[in-house]
Length: 78
View 1 (spheres, helix red, strand yellow):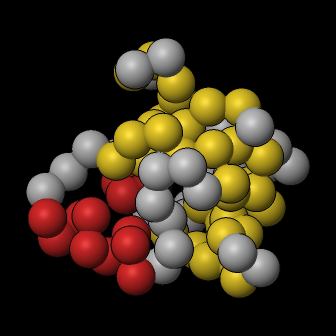
View 2 (spheres, one colour):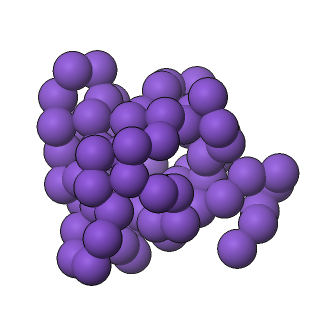
């Protein structure tokens, strides 16, 4: 799934480093991701992206997010 010259976070393989380019969703999604430090321009390291939630590292913190939310985060290779 390609959107705005990027891919959704749920499509990024484990071990990759990516930059958040866009968040697709309403105010609730934006607020929740902001609280986790996931904002445009932020570098994310994908720790695990197998079946189940996507495990990422943001600003030194490991976070697990559901695949539905991961589909709303547009990223590109860092």
